[in-house]
Image 1 (cartoon, rainbow, N blue to C red):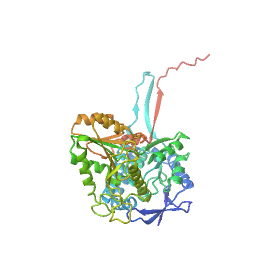
Image 2 (image 1 turned 90 degrees about the vertical axis):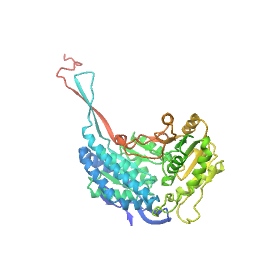
Image 3 (image 1 turned 45 degrees about the horizontal axis):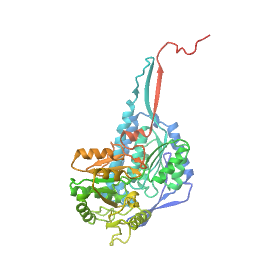
Image 4 (image 1 turned 45 degrees about the vertical axis):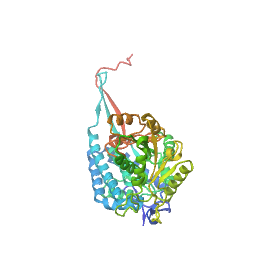
Amino acid sequence: MTKQLYIGGEWLDSTSSERIPVINPSTEEVFDYIVAANADDIDTAVKAAREAFDSGPWPNMKGAERAVLLRQIAAKITERKAELARLEVMDNGKPYPEAEWDIEDAAGTFSFYADLAESLDDSDEVIPLADERFSCKAVKEPLGVAGAIIPWNFPLLMAAWKVAPALAAGCTMVLKPSEVTSLTALVLAEIVDEVKLPPGVLNIVTGSGADAGRALSKHPGVDKLAFTGSVPTGATIMRAAATEIKNISLELGGKSPFIVFADSDIEAAVEWIMFGIFWNQGQVCSATSRVLVEASIYPQLLERLVEEAAKITIGAGHEAGTLLGPLVNESQYQKVLTAIETGVAKGAVIACGGQRPAELKTGYYLQPTVLVDMQENNPVWQEEIFGPVVCVKPFTAESDAVRMANNSRFGLAAAVMSRDDERCDRVARQLRAGIVWINCSQPTFTEAPWGGYKQSGIGRELGHWGLNNYLETKQITKYDSDAPWGWYIRP
């Protein structure tokens, strides 16, 4: 059954007859179809969002009133957790327990921003002025119509990271999920319909980035663009936004370093290294895919990492005990294989993995892969692979580790491990990244800011920073005195 578009509080079919197949990455079989929206569909969705913002009640409601609906959305997501997790596994391939985490986090995101929506009701800031004849306050107002384009690696969770703060702020939105993994976004449309979100506040339009995404990025009725994905696509969105000076926030790629000092517990380091790169099949923008190990423990740590990586259970996401599912689709699978081949051709050595598991004849499966002996200019060390591939290099001095860690066009995340807290803090402050983990890798909290330096993006999501993405700040200044201003003297 082909899924429809959710626009203006109604389920509509596209003016296009094109449909996009939905493929299960574990079996390589088509099990559904979604609508391939075109520019006309995007125009209809933006107009619905524009009408809901300019004439509807949503931006003028109290934050506490919007919070009621946000909490209802969170509750519905929780009620449908098993269904949503199953769809994520079929659509994306990730192990079922990880899909459950994502759904729980998505519900938690809506609950968190419900609280922040309430806080907006008392957010006016009185500003003391040097001239007592005036009073001044700064007020926060919703930015307008937001266009959001999300990736395929955490489908519902990435939708929640953008939809929840936008709605909390009083914005309306057109959401375009990845054409690879649109199913849970369409369930979100069912949920907002059930809770009776005002028509046009949230519109969900499926389709390709080349058609629907491009049209959304260029549409003059959109006030703000929020995008998570690759650097080339982010650059394209920036160019589209520049023509009308649209507000943008971008969360782009990463090639995050993980520095392990010699005083670290090797077993703990191995576990965090594996979680940092093999969780979600390595399809994580913040994945710590460049591991720098102090030379004195490098041989021992590498030996243990290879041993444990080889034990990871690979299989379909719905199978009990699976830790590593398939990559999301054939295109991504081939990209990762090509990246490994290119790295090896330029001098990298495969310490383990790098191939399809012999027992799995279908599905986009790849063994956990550890690469060593590469130079710093090797593409596998420099470029985001977005798969279960980790590069490991030794270092001798702290300064050298920091230099190698920072020698990247990316700056999303980084990690450092040591028993020396002072050293951890010192190194963390030197790392040019928006997120730094100490003695761990990848924990993500809705309360804390998320975003990167350099080519890893612009702006921050999550926490109150995420809410501010969708707010404008207005100065309101009043002349309180009865005395004439005195500039114009009547003749």
